[in-house]
Image: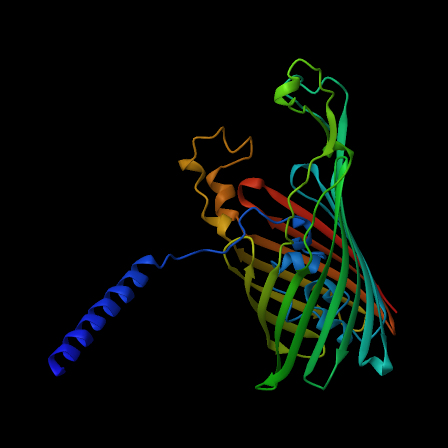
Length: 379
């Protein structure tokens, strides 16, 4: 009996080891990154020239009206009612515009804001196999919009949080789709060596999927005749093609900002940020901003520069056999500038009224460069 039990135990151990080995062999590493499967990518474009000049590494420092986009938690720290409008000509003659207004209440510990974003182009010729030159005169347009409402609150002298609810409409030619999304952010602020330090945690575009519908998806389907009615003509049946659901471009940001020196007239801040999107590999940004007041005139100047590392920085145009990347400039100079951003601003403040102008230059590598302008008011 004892010998039989030992033999049985040994057999079970061998079979168990074989099962574990088989399980290890079957393990397959998977990558859940949604490459090329998200819609409404315009939601990731920076909303203001100040943030664009800083390469997007702005979510920890944002405490003005632009925080509606970069970190809703910062809206409660803006101090006074503000508004901003931004415009940018993007790649391939597309246009981007952003506008927002925010108002503090409850003694400045809370704030509410409203924002609107548009992106797209109009009157693009339709090219088909039958009409490769687009001579038919038929055109189409793309119009993407997002409308949001933001609530932000300071819970203590060191912590604030906020969120933005957004309605998104994506119109592509004759089809359109809709989605709802939420941005959530927190901001922790304290002092280190007597100088401000801030940390921000933000998640953007967490929401529903987009499914397009419209008359261009209507189709006539030729039905197959029953076997006993092969000689009977069959009329095409009306049908609607079902489009695929597309997820939104979710972005998670962790950022840190520290004032190397700060006084009543001057401030120099360094910023760094880690980004994790759901539709590509992670990246990071770092930037610096210098502000100087011009005496008692009420004017102040700001200089900004940043760098953004993203997976597209690794593209090797020289290794491509395509026709110069569909006509985009793939020169070495352009490739080396990929991710660089810079800009500046001029602001005038008199009592509670203020007006500011900001400019940003951002290089996108082989796609070229873009310029952005923002105008802001506070009262």
